[in-house]
Amino acid sequence: MKKTFSCVSDKLENIPKELTESKNLKFPNVHENLSDMVEFSKIMKEYRKDLFCRVPFCMTVEAESLGAKINRGDEKYGPRAKEYAFKNLDELESITSIDLTSGRIKTVLGAIRELKESGEIPILAVEGPFTIMSSLINSNIFYKELRKNPERMNTFLNFLEDEIVRYIIAGIENGANIISFGDPAGSIDIVGPKVFREYSGKIAKNIIEKVRSKEKNCIIHVCGITSVALENEGMCNVNPLNCNSETYGHAIYELIHENTKTKIIGHNCIKKSIYKIPKNTIWEIKE
Image 1 (tube, rainbow, N blue to C red):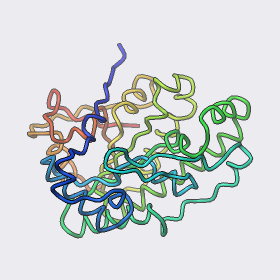
Image 2 (image 1 turned 45 degrees about the vertical axis):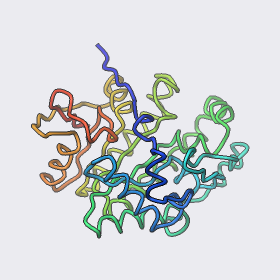
Image 3 (image 1 turned 90 degrees about the horizontal axis):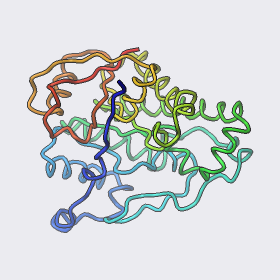
Image 4 (image 1 turned 120 degrees about the horizontal axis):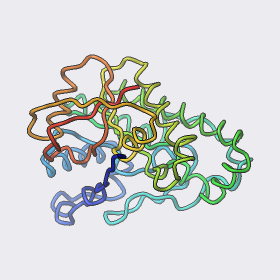
């Protein structure tokens, strides 16, 4: 029998109006400026009574670093694509590697470093290739090309795979204790089993394995939607780890300090770190 996973993250992402007013938070400063990003991450940690500080607070950083035009938003609406960077596959193939030393992606890595140096436990949220693509090119064009020119599109998706891995490694080297990886636009419910097996799920698995091979001391937390689909499609194995921790966050905290190399976990939501663990179990993702 196939497993299921329900996402409730949207309900956990709301920023209460009274919090923004009482802390005099300015938007889109928290998405752009290093000091504001660090401060906001700490404020949200304290507000949620969490153990971890998360950055960034949107799903557009990688896409913007690859050319997407992003509306930075305000306190009601977060950053989102306002204009696609590419109109067709020929233009898409002119894309260049992410410059980790400039733009918002540099700010995010700087925030990770400052949070770590100030004694916090930072989480770097990383998006998968289909979510990044959704801000780079019209989805109708993307899926049309995926059917008509699978080899050319696969070459581009492999490029994205390597760029995501490079970003993750940079995040770990700057102090991220946890990498939160998800690809909502590439979920099996959206793309279907065939595209998931051949593209979005396959790439997610490749990213996991490439980061695991680096032997860094870090937790890679895979979105439950992705990890459950990987197991259901026979693309990974999982291993239950029993724990007696008070919350999911405490269990992850203990896992960080018990291990000296990368461990991959999933089948849950990192944003639910303040809640109790179902059946006192953490799910480790194996090869």
